[in-house]
Image 1 (cartoon, rainbow, N blue to C red):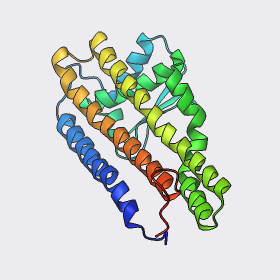
Image 2 (tube, rainbow, N blue to C red; image 1 turned 90 degrees about the vertical axis):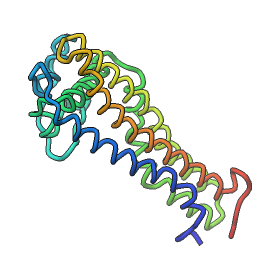
Image 3 (cartoon, helix red, strand yellow; image 1 turned 135 degrees about the horizontal axis):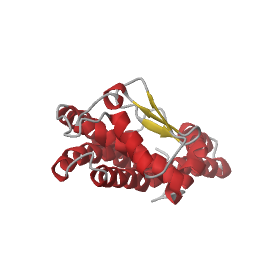
Image 4 (tube, one colour; image 1 turned 120 degrees about the horizontal axis):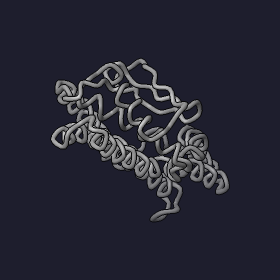
Length: 232
């Protein structure tokens, strides 16, 4: 009964379509502005280091990473890892992405509350994303309300993680564009290109949040906690 459920496709299709569109926008926008060299001539790594220096943040390493757009900031060991195109790149796309990741390091140093909260729920969220639906469906199958609630609570942790990620990412992008302009790394006219890359990247987080919320609504519906239970 639960191996294939058309209702699941109805709930997941909007999130899937949005995710595919967001992925396309990120790749196409990055490609477009990776061909526009910045007037400052700085690389992504140099721009990130300069932003951190201007904020008086010490002890954050900026290292190259493997993979396309694998850029991320690791608060655990205070390391900013940039993909090759960003680390070495001197384009508006490279500067925008590098500055965004530097924005996360700045958030960390400033004790930005949403980032702290996201870091606190990341482990429960990962557990919930893997086990939440499984536990919920087992609970439904054996008619055990307690297990159903455990599964829904587990998956809810993942939903909360995707939602709190939105202000964290939007704020990092705002800090990035403002910092690049304030330091003179990019001009006002160049800000549009760097900002376009970050706005496209933000769509992926929006898509993930929408997909997670729709999955949670589906679980609530199948468990009979939203709109009545369906046993067909």
